[in-house]
Amino acid sequence: MVIVMALRCPIVSVLGHVDHGKTSLLDKIRKTRITKREAGGITQHIGASEIPTDTIKRISKDLLGMLKADLTIPGILVIDTPGHEAFTSLRKRGGALADIAILVVDINEGFKPQTIEAVNILKQNKTPFIVAANKLDLVPGWNSVDGPFVLNFNEKQHPNALTEFEIRLYENVIKPLNELGFEADLFTRVKDITKTVSIIPVSAITGEGIPDLLVMLAGLAQKFLEQHLNLNVEGPAKGTVLEVKEERGLGKTIDAIIYDGVAKQGYYLVVGNPTGVVVSRIKALLKPKPLDEMRDPRDKFKPVKEVAAASGLKISAPDLDNVIAGSPLRIVPKNKVEEAKKEIMKEIEETAIPTDDEGIIIKADTMGSLEALANELRKKDVKIKKAEVGDVSKKDIIEASSYAQSNPLNGVVVAFNTKILPDAKTEMEKSEIKVFEGNIIYKLVEDYEEWFKEMKELMKSDEFNKLTKPAILKILPNCIFRKSKPAICGVEVLYGTLKIGSQIMGEDGKRLGYVKEIKNNQQENIKEAKVGMQVPISIEGNIMLGKHVKENDILYVDIPENEVRKLHHEYRDELRGDEKEALERYVELKRKLENNMFWGI
Image (cartoon, rainbow, N blue to C red):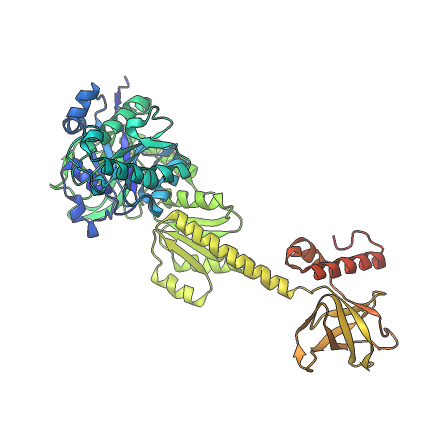
């Protein structure tokens, strides 16, 4: 069989902070109104649109003529996402599904949490990207028109507007990118697009800069990605699940991106799910029209007999209930099903999140999101005991409670973009399990880190307070008030801190008893006496004042060797200078008495 190779559309993912105009920008290109149909004007679902080369040529005609450029790619497949999270779910073997990304930034507002998150994801996946600096029309004094930015710059703008533009470009876009480790500049000033991120100022309202944006995307794809855009137009389709949803008259359907090969009517869908692989006979392949939008087409989807990559596609088939976004898929003839199952299983195994013998639980809405969350936590040396796609359940809380029994710091669930089920909330009320939830990964990780540090400090403080504190005492002259049962005398704390319950020993190493009471000058009971204080104390034990110890004798708080080690190695910085001195003198005495120079190490 002759294998025919062709050039496919580059897959472009659009990322950025909510409300910075991602979908509005695509609407201007598509001449659609997706934004107005979405709740609150914000993209709620993943969508994919095909922008044919003819459309790019029509929109960018003047600019292409000026540059004397020709387009060889068949078009661009654009994935519009609710934030960055869909990007992480769009995986294929060997990395991210998207070939290129557009990072949309409001030139007036600058970088926001989701913008930073998006850049971190792009950096992690080594995905080339350009920046669309949107809302150019809102720069004070800017005269924005529908057309190329390069033809509306400099002499057509008031000097004050140009100054304001340059300030906002640098402060809100270039500087934040520099701080995140990228060289960046206005695209007209970029000499090497492989080393410097190109920033294209645009307006989704007027259309300014959109021709420049499309030409930059197409040029980037043609110049640097052609070797990656070849596909086997004879081979079975490979793809990734965008979304699983119910469609009236069709039942459960899959919205997918096909990134290689050809999908044909009557073939079998082989798709991964949390428990393995599902094989289902395809009932229908459906496509929106070019420039239409998968999640909300203006007309009904059109049934097709075959679809070549790269393309957005809706698949109708039975048994799709447990399929999740981000799952790998193949569309193959019957005789290739077993081979496809092995491929899918291998892909699932390769992308499985490695877990530790102990650690926390993480949950996410998609496999890609779970992978991104795990990667960010791993960077902070966080151990992960369990990593799953899905909502937080009662079982998760019970398991986290069991982890907390051996280590309270493991009694945690970190959940990205998922719900906490009602039975899990009920279980949470009965336990002390901490659940972190949110839709920005790095913010989740930050919140967890902050809690972890606070908890560690609390646990450290609690353990430190329970340790025996070092102290050296001197029995004051004329201050023996009772010889025994209990012995009562006045002492001066020479070094350290004397606490209720401390065991006391003499310089010969003989244990004399424990401190039962400490009183202050007003004869009130106190819990501890610090260096320099002279206080009466009672000692319960075998001590007989005048016989075992006398006036002016030195007494030591007797500390177990394991606690000495902790004070030396873990809590030395927590001790005051006089407490360190007390500890050193005590250790020196014990080594002498035990005839062991390594005692306490």
